[in-house]
Amino acid sequence: MSQQNTTIASPPSTTIGGRSKASVHVTALDGIVNVNSLFTMAIFIDFSLSSPAASGTSNKASCNASVGIVRKVIIFEANFFSFFLFSSQIAQSLKLATSLVNRLDPKDPHKADIDSFFMKCGLLGSAIGSVLGCAFLMLSIVEFIQVKLGVLSCGGASVYAIVTLVVFVGSSLLVYILTAVYASFFM
Image (cartoon, rainbow, N blue to C red; front, side):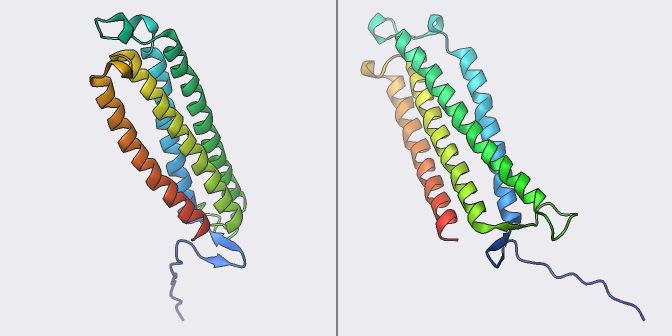
């Protein structure tokens, strides 16, 4: 008598008594950590490029950025680095918890019984850290543009660059916030 080896594919996220299979969540956590790592690299590149001696391309001294603006670049970069690190640490902690609670299939770390409320709160906390990190990154780039192209009050290229940055990054952050809220509270 031969037995057939059949497997039934389970859905990516199901709920059993307050617990959920977290394969989709682990993939989302991987994405958060990867994106935060890319943004964190940006801070080190920006630190090397934002020196007061190289500031301003304008002929008018009043259009060149002050030392205060260069200081704001560093403050905003420290803040965005902190929030991205916060977000990444929460995501890594959730991945660790998912791996430790893995009882369904020890060969597949993407499937585990984990409390869905715990996972949603962790994902929301990580998303909040990413949003705040992006906001401070955007503020840092606004100040960096003023260092390199001249202050906003003088108009010109710095205004165009900053408006483009704020419109596109702001709209993408809005989409990200709405998605994170939907995933945390309505799924």
